[in-house]
Length: 133
Length: 133
Image (cartoon, rainbow over the protein chains, first blue to last red):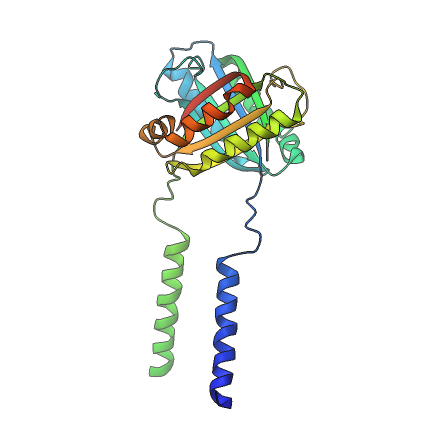
């Protein structure tokens, strides 16, 4: 290998090396979230109007800055099995970075307004807070 | 503006234009998922070993190709409130594109193996299937 070719080889290897590092990080660790799962049972479980109103209410929470991701749902028509609870009407799923983010959300004026304006719609609410592992 | 500068201006404007289109799509519609929320109550609720074994089992499900996203969790140490259920030990959250994706998962050999190999660990399981709206 002459001097010029050797230099080209080194440069190419360096570029290739940089590309490889970018494509395959040494530690492809996925971000782990605190998942806040909430299920609502309406006072009028058969009222599509109340369901849609609560969905609208839950969506106002998206403004809270510590929420990293929000998914608002209604009962899916999956296969009925003994283990599947189909008695609820509206779900709310949020991802927070940590416990502090979730605590900020609980006391946030937008959340307090939501409770004030929409809690008359539900009879029961159940929360599951999970830390991703 | 001379001819050379005019050409540069047009090129720059085109590049800027392309960038603007990419950054602000006309319809920023977010993908809506079917969220499959599962909560497990262990036969030995105080056994960290059983909890970790079930976590390991749930993570094997990630291989199922219709799962778009999976989050495995354990009870988070959020504030204790009446509405928060803290009696479970392991959670599994999956996103599917649609009902068919969830049905494929239910009957998938990897899922059936999981039930065969790990169901002796849990006393109760509750599932909530939510269609994002």
